[in-house]
Image 1 (cartoon, rainbow, N blue to C red):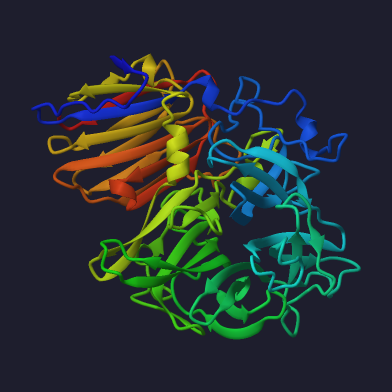
Image 2 (cartoon, one colour):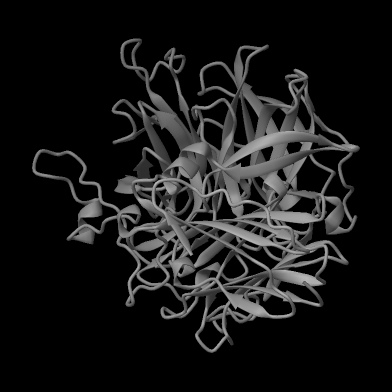
Length: 545
């Protein structure tokens, strides 16, 4: 085993029939969030009135599934990310949060901040729900020219558009949902609700009108809001020049998977990779149930937007097999993702909830429940008759994960023939970034086992079948799974070989895995709940070398 603490090792290719070359960046303890001495301080002001921020505690034997490299709350429930924005040098992630319990309810906006998209500091609850109005999903826009009039030219506001879900005594009948505004004049530390709320509702009022996301449309010099009528599988588009008064543009519906609620839509314009100068518009829509892996999932459509109407190209039709739709992720646990407004770098950066409504409220973690996936950078590729979204780890997060000051880099080349070969203790860290290239030309089935037990009976199995050209993530023997009959055992996707090889980038955390294949053309994200002592890693092949 070669150990290079300062830089990744690029091993020479061996002249053998099958080589599994694994370059692994292991995180030292300094890469995991440092726990605060008093977790309850997350929601307490200091004596001077400044918010006291803390990092979530690190994983431990008493809390074995707490993520080390993913956003979660120090305690209590979180789900969909909201109000994602980069402002004043800081990434802000707001999210659906229950300040009072480890279950969905009392929906409020939690708040965490980061400078690198890996290490997050939890802030006080941004907007807390009440019996008359729960605070559902939404978006934040830096109103840099103070078009809303809610700030000043010298101190322009951050403007949040969010869904009000009304209870007894609310502005609309109980159960109704409408879009409201709040604003911040102190870089997101505190929020004031607009007195004219709600700013947008349907007539008659709808119980499923929600999830506003805002895009600036430069040719028309106005903002476009995407929302959904979730149970009708309809995305509704509106426009505004001041973020307060909204006019209807059009509906988008009648395509793609329709087996559940449509939620958290987003419309964004992207450059097509390759330097041609071509731009396309992309509509991202979450669906629950009816996803490609069962339960929750995320589909997308590529097409054109003329300022009024979005038109999808080569989209699947309702009733088509799910494989005909285009999916952001083929695992079970990636949902409600949306992009970070004003993120640096010029490419969309996406943050999603690592959960599935089939079993999210039953997962065995405590005192927290729910986490976010690693932020992802999106690119749009022209492939055959369709354009495809590709996902890779966002650059800021990748830099943090591979920081030579806080990570150790190990390398191993090996040939495996009808057997399982240990990757040794160097590959036993709970949180790992693994780059693997597998030459599978001489093997029927090959892959990796991670978080394995000493007796070899337990482990997360990532495998590639050469005959079917299918990548599979199998969590059936990876740990605790008896909390829900809907906790599906495995997920798979078609991944064509390139020159007889399969390239994987795997981010493994305490209770999750994200597998990016062939430069991000396919991603499989799953949560799992291994035993604390299971830290083994191995490479295997079956049916050849």
